[in-house]
Image 1: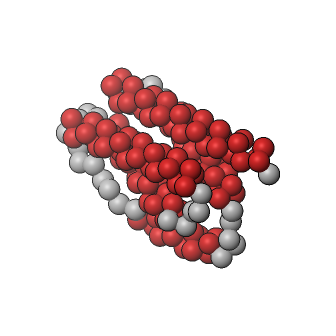
Image 2: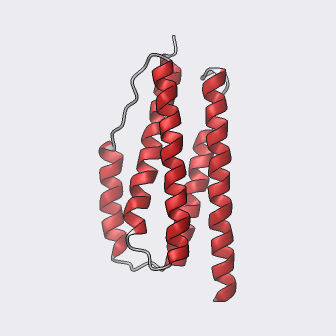
Image 3: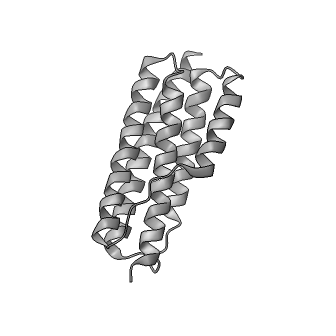
Length: 148
């Protein structure tokens, strides 16, 4: 009965997992402790959202799927290639901001007829958390741009 909702939530879990892994790789290469702190909080918010979606899938009688898969492998290759470019922390912050905005767009695409009300409310809470992540990154970027 809830197969469509479960499939959609599992796709969001995959997206959250990709974001968590990407931030994990990026954080270790950053020099700016302030940006590291921001991205660790962002990473933690993605983890919390992933767990909430996982719990909802279980409530609906489904099984959460955690698997980086091909997209994660491609991201690993892209990351290792891009590392050679020696991006600045500010450039990395801009990339993270774009990723967060893109993720909010993905979350906003869910239509009410595809997902049950409770799951839709969880997705809206996720959008709100992402918007807070975006705000933190924008504040960091604006502050660093003024200092340049």
